[in-house]
Length: 382
Image: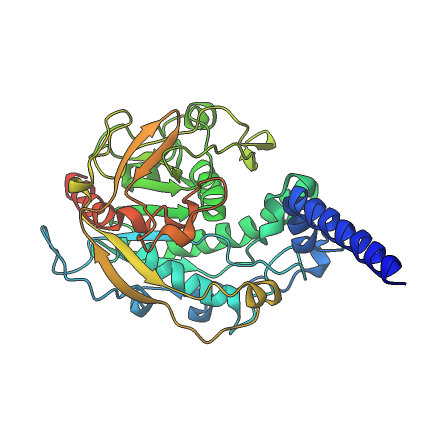
């Protein structure tokens, strides 16, 4: 009997090890399956589009900039009041498999993430600009998995309808004599690239565009040349009316992902060719920048509760600024990736490093001080 029990336990042990091995080998596929909606995309399943004539459809508006207050003292050049506008399109904060697009319920995990991104990203433009940040029926994280491409691009189209509608209200209601920026990250950059083609490129409005900071989306180096007639890649610190992009990563990271990308001819993918990269510390496409030149990385604390994210449930945790780390992180564009130094085990950004070494979730924060200074300087040159 004892021999039988030992034999049974050994078999169970082997099975457990096999299950763990399978889970480890296919953990990515299992995660994608868990985060993907069970139903195919259907427009009828989406909630009603926001009305951007209402202040409640915006996360930030002129006169409502509270979510952008970092408490960090201004340094260097200062303005007595905003001289420009910044249209900010936030990244993905909706992770639930319940639907392809956010139901835009508040409070929720996704609405909390929008507030966190206002503080961590858009705040860099709050000195130079009045920030306009629409809430929108963002596509969920599942759209970026290759297995969901067909449903994903339809969900992205729906999200863009909202962003486009918001941008048209922005154009109609802003002071049309003022220059403006377009600022975006991740999914937001997919939509911002499309806005540039639909409303700015080849039009009189282009003369008012200071720059488009379309960050964190594996944008191919030749995208601007392929898509736009007038808009070019920024190549230096004060270039005007141009496109900026970088994907931050650890020095030895191997980033190979390919994601949906809009072209005038239809949806394609980012592919795996060299990405567009400019260094947000020294604004060079080739020269490295030492940590001493980094004017400050903004450390923001926000909820990272995975179960709340999957259920899109609010955590009640408000984002807060913990510190501004000056002179801690260097960077260099190499083969289309912004290689970042200084993110060691003690760094508050270490927890944001993906298994592949991606620093996607810190694309703005790591260089926040330089972004704030560059936006103002670029504006004054305009």
